[in-house]
Image (cartoon, rainbow, N blue to C red; front, top):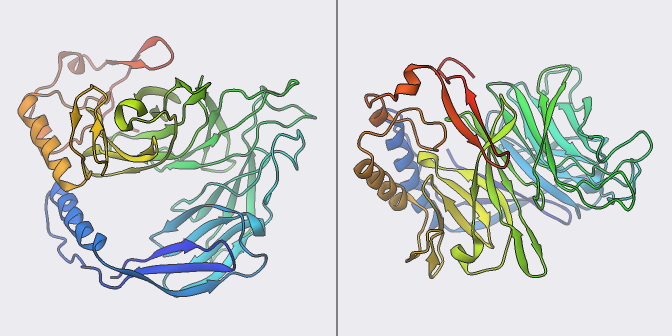
Amino acid sequence: MKSRVVVACLLLGVAIVLPFTIKADEDGNRRDRDDRDFRQSEHHKHNVKTPVGLIGVIPVPGNPVTSADIAWVDPGTERYYFADRSNFGVDIIDAESDLFVGRVGGMAGPLTSGGGTALTNGPGPNGVLVTPSRKLWAGDGNSTAQVADVDPDSPTYLQILHSVSTAIPACDSATAHYCGRADELGYDPRDRLILIANNAPLSVAAPHAAIDPYATFISAMPPYTVLGHLTFAGAGGLEQPLWDREIRRFFLTVPGKIAGGIVVTGPSIAVIDPKSMMVEKSYALDCQALAGTISASITGIALGAFQHLLVSACGFPVAQSRRRPLLCDGARHQHAAGAVGRRHRCGNEHVAAERAERQRQEPGRLCGDQSHLHHRSAQCRNCRQPRDRQQHVHSVRLQGHGVHRRLPPRHEGRG
């Protein structure tokens, strides 16, 4: 089956870029998931060398698309959703037939921020995703998460079903609205909740200075209750939440701050427990050590094999393992530990080397350590259990909160 990449065109429509030849993988009989990851990596190498070309343009009705944001592909329905602010909604493209099929309208559009009113409190839509129940979630202006029906067989197809406010008292009151847009979001299918970021709130009190960004936990089930908020002290914004089903945690990329040419707070990757709604670990990135740059930037994030993360940070692609960050495809890089090394392609070779090193150095590593991001593979099934596991408690440090919490054990059958 051919893979398709759909790209939002910022003028008149949407263009599709398609590899001319894709090597299909028909072998579904591999018993070990790690082997499947390696096989996919080999196919990725093939695809990287495959030429691409423009094969057509999909017309999008309405205004020319001059303001857009996040896009989301639903593999189950083969539909592509993208945030089209120019037309005040989320456009839906059938990626199989290459046709525009509809739009969820009624959203903020390309509005400004910082004005203190519902119409000057951020643009939208921003982040988008679709849940298995075919509910579209979109971050919108005026600190609003929109829930819409995108099931073509439903009588409420393309209608907004509910609007959820993500505002908090620090940036919002009955008459003043300064929390800004509800931005990017992620979905936890196990607990059926949404994590959505308010990346640039302002104080409700004059002179309306910037305050710490925060994220909101929302139940993905009607009546879509707000479950709590999580503030990121000292952060310069919030970017992309990403759900990891292996460890049942959200990752969230957190930009830092620069003042007077000095990095005050560096960029990081937060690991968030959806049960406690708290950050239980944070991976800090040193841009000076990694890339030789004065930067606090971090944006997109993707999860690869063996719990390796790929993030856009410090102006470069960076692979974050549970041991250290590695700069991808740079001429030279420096580990956070200080050792200068050759460039890494962040592909199959790096994953295999890291796994071999881990097995050599930790032949009797403890099982189920949620404070580390390792893959619970066959090698861990027969290794020894720690004594505190037998006592059914474990302890983790909550980074940035200065406290320890003792949490119940996390069994396979529980969330």
